[in-house]
Image (cartoon, rainbow, N blue to C red; front, side):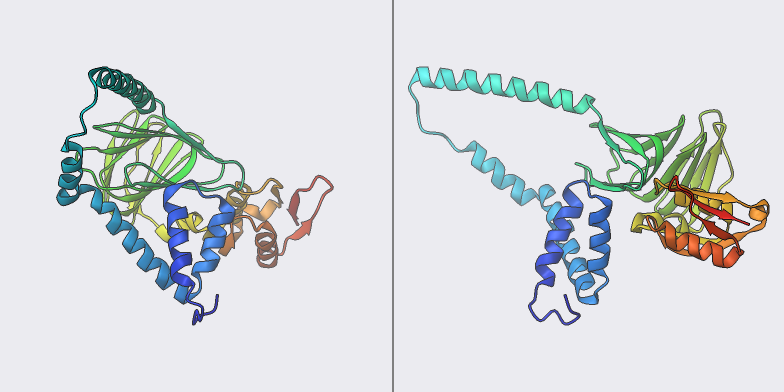
Length: 318
């Protein structure tokens, strides 16, 4: 695809991407392909228009005129049938409704489970219009009920774009803590008994298992440790949510912390064998699966040597 799009393919491709990203789970490879396609300005503009049209179409479900038209069609009389055919029809309809009701009840109580492996990410659109991005090595369970939307983050981290519904709060639970929202964008991470919550848009209320509550404003984060809610603090939302675009951003980050974060996305671990590791820091932006680029940059900045043992790991050594 060129910038001028002489063949006019951008709108069709944008519509296809919009459907893929909004209706099913999306693999990391697909996300990377989408980001590469969207880098072209003509593609980015076409996608913005397609997403706007997609959102407008969603609103048709609540249009009163459409609802009246459907009701009018359902109210139309049907051609008369012999009584025995009518009886069989009614019985079949009753059995079908019963089966549908039982399946519906089962689907309501059965959670939707999403899980990712090492280096994998998933983007899923929920039935209520919300979207969930699941990071590497993560697992969530989702239950959408009539009066409440519940999500259990069993491990890892996820980013939520919640569809507004004042009658159905959206509650994310992790390690006994809960994050309550109505319509907002926020991330939750559960890691070694700590739960981190970062808010990008809207408002959320965080409650701890043991004590404390906190209401976050956009650009703030809070950590729940030992079931107790800490004080809200300013957050680098760009860096902390960069993983949603397939990249990791480090800004004067301790090298050991950056290594641990990169290792979450790779089967071949990076090992830091340096007495001075605690004082070393790194800055930069790296693709989540590109550990080679990270190791090369870390080696150049820190002066550490790169070693490749036979087991497939990568060592940064003095």
